[in-house]
Amino acid sequence: MAAPSMGGVSLPRGNGQTVRLPRGASLTDLAERIGAQPAALVTALFHLGEMVTATQSVNDETLQLLGAEIDWDIQVVSPEDEDRELLETFDLTFGDEEGDEDDWSARPPVVTVMGHVDHGKTKLLDALRHTNVVAKEAGGITQHIGAYQIVTELDGVERPITFIDTPGHESFTAMRARGAKVTDIVVLVVAADDGVMPQTVEALNHAQAAEVPIVVAVNKIDKEGANPAKIRQQLTEYGLVAEEYGGETMFVDVSATTRQGLEELEAAVLLTADASLDLRANTEQDPQGVVIEGKLDKGRGPVATVLVQRGTLRQGDSIVAGDAYGRVRSLLDEHGNKLKEALPARPVQVVGLTSVPRAGDTFLVVEEDRTARQIADRRQARIRNAQNAQARKRISLEDLDAALKESRELNLIIKGDNSGTVEALEEALMKIEVSDDLSLRVIHRGVGGITKSDIDLALADDVIVLGFNVRAEGQATELANREGVDVRYYSVIYQAIEEIEAALKGMLKPEFEEVQLGTAEVREVFRVPRIGNVAGSLVRSGTIVRNSKARLIRDGAVVADNLSVDSLRRFKDDATEVREGYECGIGLGSFNDIKVDDVIETFELREKPRT
Ligand code: GDP
Image (tube, rainbow, N blue to C red; front, side, top):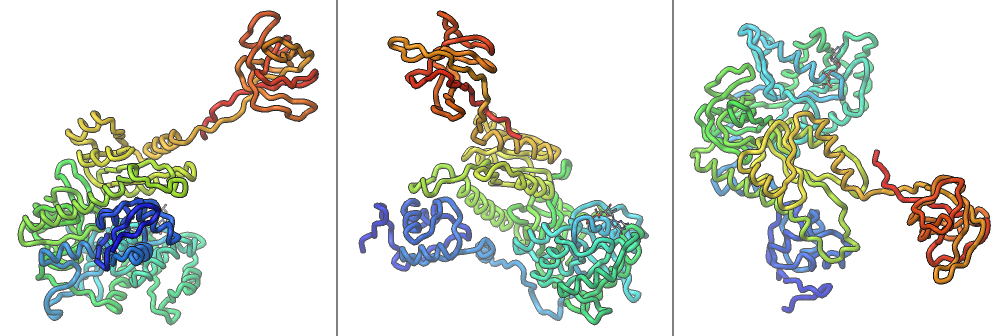
């Protein structure tokens, strides 16, 4: 069958063949797979009434629509599916408990604290940390590693609870968006002296969407004006009805400051877990879990806090976490104690990885080091491909340019010493608004030093590389210097924001404003052969400057704009400028319609400073 012609470019028909594309692929990606010109696909879609650029990510339906048109069966594969397939090639699966349910053991609940800003999440997490009956005896100092576990007493039994130590919805949602279900229970903090606020509702929506049970901590009850009953009342509107009102949600009045109600809150978490969740895990299988936090430690190298979800993680295990791999050299708890093993729901710091994984990455323990490395390599390759696809942008603006005009972008690569700061910096940067047609795009982010591959990536486009508390590694510095890549180092977020804002402003088209220079009144009109009419004038204000722009005003109305002071004379001599109160002869080029009493206004255009 002959290839149909669309917009003059031919398209290879698929005859029903299947092509698999990662979710969010662009027409350029599709073009590559089916051997077509990206421009032809842009045109084809254009004819179907959809206007997209060649490198823009296209949604699933649009891809299907286009597929039907050119007779290709387009299958969109999500990154999760892709990863599942990758693991399958190694006979691995992530996420399912193995073995006979009867052999599974109970595990502690994992809790995330959410709520409106300033309602006391951080303070509450700190207070809860110190309720640990076991640590109290040991007198251990806790460090922030992204999660901690406490042991509390319920009905005379010591029971652990794990708290994710990065409060906020962002981390919860980011992890969930990446397919990592970490949280079993959400503690929703609401300040009793304030009430239900936008982020309270947002937190609640996130928790309900994830079908995670909620325990409400009504905080700050020590404060004057605290009204815990009002909080209960308000939350009924959102489907959270307190037990004492016949509902199913446990509300606990607490004060993170006076530490009142903390044990009751812990009990409520355990009771809610017992009532609505069956928290058990197989401790015997190969360990798996999720990365909570990753950072580059000066002495120890890449360090990741992971939450073990199933199996028992041990020193010496071969582990792959996201695109990092390695062998567990040591396991440390939040007190800095070395552990031999970590059971399900235990957060531990893992030392021994080759690079820093991202929060939300999953980890698996595999039989052989080689397998871990291969999986990590394949994931790295996939990430690189995705980045390259994004970075291709500049070279591939196709036809139809008028219709598909692109806005301008400043591309960034952000590297930092831990995932929290990288995320915070990215978030802060994305909030910068300069103008509608200018935007920031983070094409790559990660934890660790700036590597040669970061610089390679930066070379593909106009990219600024930001290092937050990290530096470029040897080869990377050389390459950056040689190729003139803009690498900037920061250790304070606001400084980075200021500079990037300034860089963005520098990219804006300059805006000009008119500045009046002077006005002159026409007293007499001279005819000068070969030159035309010259206005014998008196300078009324400012200065008349030769070559400045001018307009002619008659009886208060502009007669001619866009003129210029082509000649300027004082008596017989050429002058460059003539000041207020002096007489001069002004020639306005070929413009001759000058009359006595006209006013010549002169001005210049100055670039407007940006605010
Ligand atoms: P977050 O933004 O939700 O993490 O809130 P923070 O934990 O930073 O707390 C915000 C402010 O409220 C801080 O000044 C805390 O000291 C204060 N705060 C938190 N909990 C309590 C409490 O129970 N009682 C009182 N009086 N103040 C509290």
